[in-house]
Length: 210
Image (cartoon, rainbow, N blue to C red; front, side, top):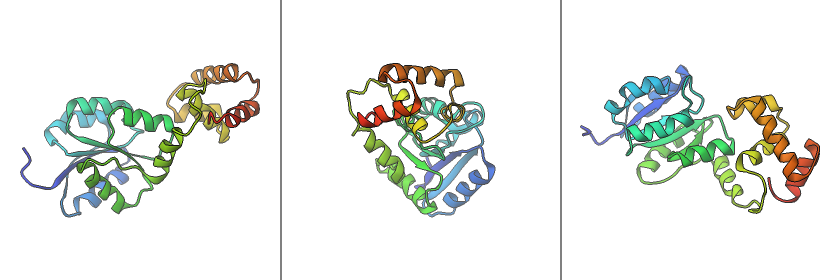
């Protein structure tokens, strides 16, 4: 049972400066109380149930268990707690994985401070706050050709290729190994009946697969 009417917030963020910044910002806003701050999911798991937060701000790139993988674990520990993803990552795959795993919202770290506080209030009211760019990505995903032969992961990898990212960079950003990326690209070429990166991008754009 909570002793006050404040919105209780826990923060899981490995960057100490960012973590303390959020804690200061939220803790000094009337109606909000920071009940716990943690550098990793493993640290949070030891005490977060006792903290009993209303809302958790969760980073994606954490040491040990990533924020995305921690999401379902946190939902199991605290089924009534709202989880807001707060990250630098804007990849569609991560967004859909987060939302599919129970995230209540998805904000990027360049979100103005007052909007982060407003988003915490919004999820308590049943809303699903997203940064404007994230919302556009989600909406645009529904406008694609539904008959695409590509899986969601293949689509995302091809989108990354189209922005000029290397296979190694794609592997790092999607938290998968290089061989997996190469395998996906091979499948993309086969499905689109092409033999080069440029032809794959052209075929996908012409058919609104990306």
